[in-house]
Image: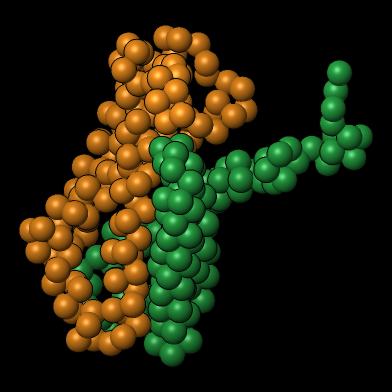
Length: 130
Length: 126
């Protein structure tokens, strides 16, 4: 019986489609969503430390200020901004707009460019304010 | 021939008995998170690396504390629903799927509980 079910044809998956911008950004949307899910641990650590007292807060701040911490936070910023912009595209599609081939492909590329640009901008502002 | 009962048609909840609730909650929280996260990022830009007393005093401001709590709630609901979708899409073994769905609920509640309690403690007790 196991053999019979194993040989059943599967519905087409990723490998049969041509790689296009909307598809790539759909995958990135899901990956960034997953990353943000686990990134909640960072937010929890920061808030719990702030609620625990000065010593705990300084320790967590030290980690976030280290090179590893800064790289993680930079990636977290990008994941958040990319997922946010991707979410706006999804709302547009949910409302029934923006399905044209060229437009949606352009918007998918713009999503990537804008998310990187905004991430760099946020970090420039952080460095200026500090 | 339509086998659906008139009551089933009116309710429109389908075989999973929850209709469009999952979809709707994901979209509602996503819309809420756009302004909330923009504010949150702005706050973090202003207070990243600032001393303890300054950050805690800012987080205990009623307006900021409310935004903080709302952002936590909307994020946790949104991420729990999103991870549910990922698990249901990729995990086809029933046992593993249910185990991961339960784990997802536990992780979301734990992370949300910690964040929310910390936010409220800072707001009320400093």
